[in-house]
Length: 223
Length: 223
DNA sequence: CAAATATAATAGTATTACTATTAAAATACG
DNA sequence: CGTATTTTAATAGTAATACTATTATATTTG
Image 1 (cartoon, rainbow over the protein chains, first blue to last red):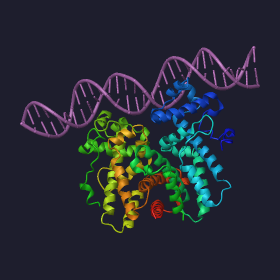
Image 2: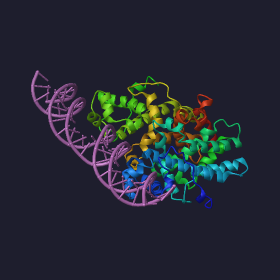
Image 3: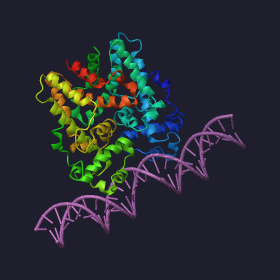
Image 4: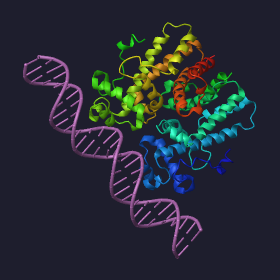
């Protein structure tokens, strides 16, 4: 996988940014540093002014790339899901039988990220942001508008892909989308709870529990 | 149930409020109106100034009850979970066999709220707030502090109660807490997605699908 | 090399999320 | 009943946020 990723650029919806941050050095530093700052201080305390100062630039320059910090968060989420989709396709094409393919997919969706494969984006830290902050992006009054503009298209496509794999295993299963979105959001919650509200989880019992738990849950549920 | 509720007052952690809002008419109007305003405008756009104006009072008066709008949200969440715990205990005591008891519990956790049983709190609208806004309460940098102060105690107790019911059905099931928190958060997500991102769900296929889906998922998973 | 574009710096605005102070109104209690 | 206490309302003020607008200076491109 490491061999291919450096050649890939994800096609992120152009409506999300004012100017493509991947098109300049400043843009890349904006994305790179915003990830570490949001992780460190949390989305609420993060501001474009602080970001400008950190990258030796200016608040107004950041606004030339993203019209709001909300848009920047949506951009990061889209980058994340493009990356997950890429890994998902890579890990599942040509895999048979259907059940093994599905198992691989669930692993991609629920595993912990341990190292950075490429580019200026730190995927380990980005995943932490997805876990702690991403729900703030879509729990907004603007959700319907933004959904129409296609801001959540990639996420929905990932859910669709895995739902199709569920149906390959059991074509008569009634609720594939609910199952897949439950696993995705659930795994994020379990990662967060294990850090902050551990009594809502059972992670202390072993390392790969989240993957094991959801893999088992899916296979049993669809049979 | 309607006969008992009017006599009940939930013991909400005193650290959450400055002055108990149930102790005065103004306090009750603060809670009552904040629920409808947060639902209408979303948590971000909701302010104590607007609330003061709406209840014919003043911003500063609201601060005498809650030290921040975050604290008010935490209060509403606690009220909600106290109410759910009450319903849960009511619906499950003396029920046998264990599997039926668990089924009742899952129904309480995943059902839609359709009418208001009592008091100045509109539970139908409060549930909408829980679904759309509650994750903002605990996705904060202050989570560990607040957890130590007991802000999430009732929620954790509800998870514990239902986890115990899971273990009654299958004492050797490894991940009861993960299963129960997955169901609770998952059901909230499905309610939200069905309104705003329907392709992440399968709710169009029928009315009680969310209850059915999670009940089936739990029973199959623990066997 | 001129023109176009990108960046940096500065200033300004409405709003937010509060704190502080004071006065008026309501309530409690001896 | 009257005074003390508490509650509420009104006003003012503050630092920070989330922007917009303007201009000057770099940098890139044709």
